[in-house]
Amino acid sequence: MIRSMTSFGRSSSEEGEKRVFTVEMKSVNSRYLDINIRMPKTLISLEEEIRKMISNSLNRGKVDVFINLKNYNDGSGIPKVDINLAQGYLECLKEIETKLGVKNDISVMQIARFPEVITVVEEEDKIEEVWKELKPLINDSLEMMIGMREVEGNKLKEDILSKISVIEELVSKVEEFADTIPKAFKMKLEERVKELLGNVEIDENRIAMEVCMLADKATVDEEIIRLRSHINQVRETLNLNDPIGRKLDFIVQEMNRETNTIGSKSSDIQMTNIVIDIKNILEKIREQVQNIE
Image (cartoon, rainbow, N blue to C red; front, side):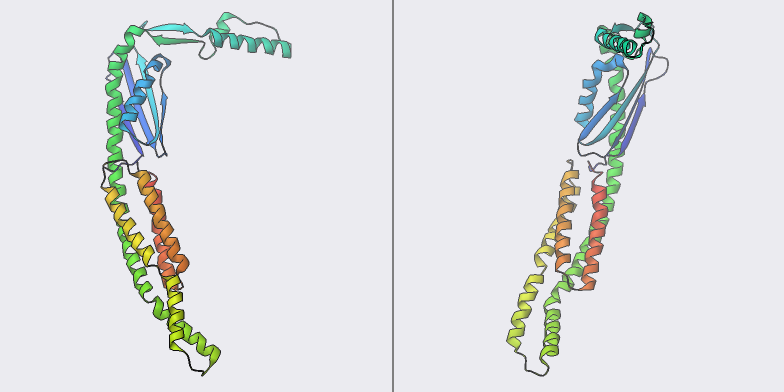
């Protein structure tokens, strides 16, 4: 089923437990799958598992994950000190002392208060217990996101199909004008020749030859055939169960290219206006396709 890349998912554990989690996910369109996770440092060892769950369910989109934890289990973590980071802070403070000539009143307590010098992590034998509680919530949030993606994707599908049908009608009008091109060229050429030569007799064979040459340069039959083929490809692609965003984007680009070629060959203002209408609709479709997974 076609999916949008714009969605939101949320889940939380019940109050009263030792650990209460809140998981929120939101995604917007992106060329690739880009996952950003924000969660307590005590859960950092679970980040890779969370990424795997998301990447197994989603193919594209910028996904932001927010995990909050209220821990009511006293003494559930172990404090860890980052000596290298503390050393870095100390050296910076000494540099300030030397360059600014201020009093050195550095203490252990002051350095310990700097960000990330001391952190609390879950005990190794408890992280599996934490994961058993968190994993179902990640899964519930993902299912909500996928559900929203499918609902929005279905709306996009219906709208794109509607726009494609309008383009198909406009292509039929272009085809009607294309059939009149040789006759229009003949009339214009005869009028121009009469203006220049007056009552001099005109060689009809010569006129016919020139009309054929001009009509051949202005013919849009191939472009129309390819446009109709692309229209069918869009419809077929929208019914696939695979990620189709990139494929649709390519097809729309090709449709736009064929439309530009028709416009460059057009010498009729009505035909030109139809081409402009097609391009406007294609641009709207292109914007919608950017949000399809």
